Length: 294
Ligand code: ADP
Ligand code: MG
Image (cartoon, rainbow, N blue to C red; front, side):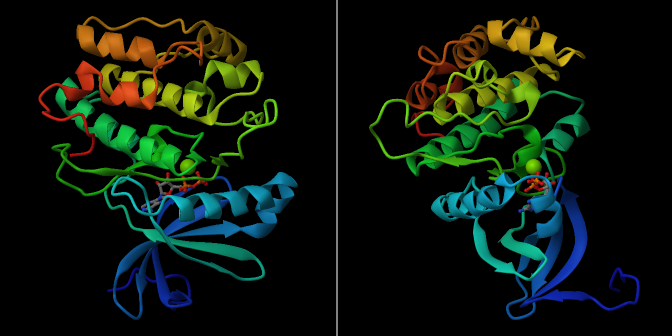
């Protein structure tokens, strides 16, 4: 019955038996796994220490930050919870909630590339709830994109599933208040299409506004089926992002346009805040209270 690895023996890590590969990133592989004690199914992210460290001196600190961030944000229905961390000489293992439905991006492709406003709203409310929670815990994700939003349950494609934010691998923790621009972040990171203008400008940025921008790119993508800013030449793409130069497809409602224009405000100082997103009419259409994720 077992898939059978070469040699036939199952790979056991601590109390967990590793199963099939769920996905991978640059330095990591994520496996389906099962607790040998409770039978509980989990996901285990395996980071190859050597590969990660070869990539740069900053990686060790970044892995520490990923663990610290996940420990801070472990109590929200829309955020992947870290159960425990284990390490061997060569590898680090993150035992996490298993999210069964795959990446939101794949789901989007499966339904023909874009969502109607009602299902998009459902996802977006959950995204905003998760981001609001992370920020309240002092964690900026900095890599919000549909590959890192995992659909919680396979509901046969009717898009009612919950999803969870995952991959805190590029996250930053809020610095203590005071002292010049001591609260601003300077690291350029994230995925080009989702990156905020202030990150490209490298003037120091506030992690909160950068996450709000990425939410705007994600909402546009969900409704449009394509990215707001795209160019095969990276410099040209950055140029469009810096000016927030994009066009709405005709089918976007007026409320959706108003919200996205506020999310994709190129000026981080005037960009909409999470509190104002939560109160925006588009988000609350058909809902009687302004609390997301219900
Ligand atoms: P990286 O930091 O290398 O990008 P991620 O944490 O994003 O790694 O994981 C890589 C991929 O593995 C994800 O895009 C997703 O497909 C899958 N994955 C990650 N975490 C989980 C999880 N908790 N449950 C199910 N699949 C997961
Ligand atoms: Mg990832």
